[in-house]
Length: 133
Image (cartoon, rainbow, N blue to C red; front, side):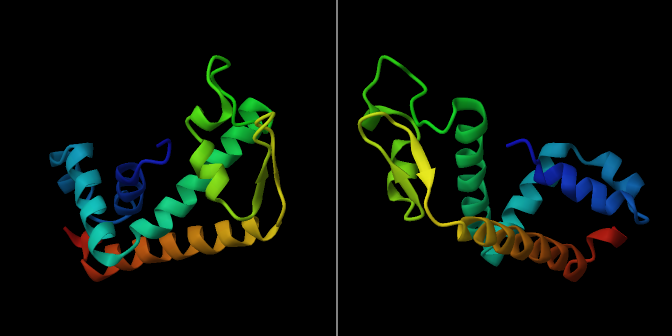
């Protein structure tokens, strides 16, 4: 993903006193540590929803609101077909591959999930004293 947890973690910690310690760790170690804490805290479910909306956004912006990426494949065989078909707030045409968002609360859901996820990350960092390594 474009938003790397390691980068977020590094940025949050770099503002504290642990910059020297972070230089001793590779980005992969930091990222893996954050992923582990996200897994055990239950935040991954929120990340999954955020990532789904990111994929939908990319289909809108980069593919003109169509699921069709590979013109040689039928709609049902397109990579994001299942994502869109199972999303209750989206209407997908199985003939053309075009889709529309039918419920604007998808935006509210996205902000709720993003806020909950970031609040959870903040709490993980605070509770584990990552800023004081």
